[in-house]
Length: 219
Image 1 (tube, rainbow, N blue to C red):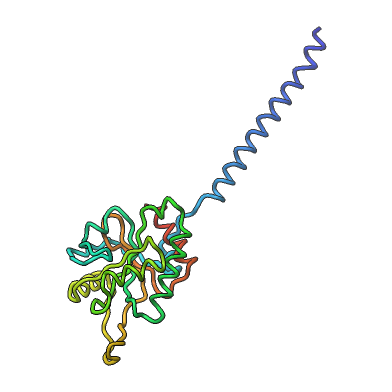
Image 2 (image 1 turned 30 degrees about the vertical axis):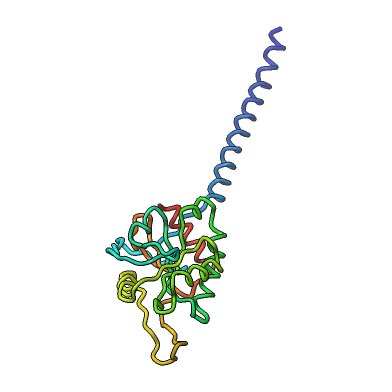
């Protein structure tokens, strides 16, 4: 009896030790996998190197009164409750605008659904003389039905564009087919309606996606 009992104790002890070691290894491996697969938040320097420039302090763009592509008023309240990406362009733009909007449509479909739900992409017209709300509506919806367009009186648009560092100017000459010089950057505003930074042109889908997702995870 005594001999048999004594011989079994080391066996149970070895089994217990093996179980504990296996459990410990499983915890370590799980932790490693979690760290490796967890989305990382980029540093400010890394985001800047990838084209996103964030300000040290948010900027209030003040009051403004514009018109959305559905004909309804568009003001500060329309920039609250969602993250907003604003691109300043126009429907007669021959190259930069359609290229950028096509890229933004790809970007919008690529970001995680939980981020897309409260993200709005807006084309702000720099050509109020030709870009009616109806024309803007058809134009932005061609690229993505979720996009919005905004126009308004020239001085109101100029004031708003200046507030977010996106000045524009009409190119002299050209008659009815005139062009408008404008920034290729994309303005980023937070759900409080504050201007917090911009994606610098030229844009790439990879950089736009990874920097935006990093900002969202950090906030």
